Length: 228
Image (tube, rainbow, N blue to C red; front, side, top):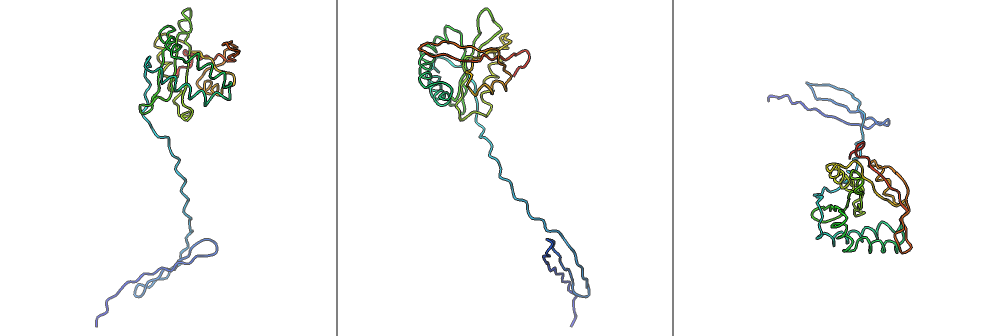
């Protein structure tokens, strides 16, 4: 009978108290060997949860027309009643919506006062709007941001900044050098405007009738120094 050499290699693994593993490696004759080796056991690192990214939606900023008045009114009522009860009373909210956002008022702003309205759409649905105009014919380079509103659940996604940037691009093209706005002194949006580069120019208290006042800051963005 002819014997055919057969190589057998075995490994015995032992866990030691110090957290290392020792394994014994040997093979049968004629390839006899005996070795001891030590290796450090490395525990697998836990996988960190993947932070979900905001869903990317198709964004469009478009010029508004009179046909958009019902949308502007709907967004105004929804946003004001969510955001402003901590800033002004509900009675003042309703009064200002009735006087500033009636169909007649918005139509007059567009046709007589020269306010340009824009609509922000996500996936074809209007979620915000803004308007702007020249402050006064005597100051043709100074513009006013009349309105800027976005559904609260969409705050923090850079959409408000995109609307302001769009407006700044338009007015710079028209020769404007500054953009001003009024904001209530209790409105947290002050921090948003300051982040964009607006500064507080002065304080004003405006009587708007029916026993209500607007207690505001006038904030200004110098477009010659800090264009968006």
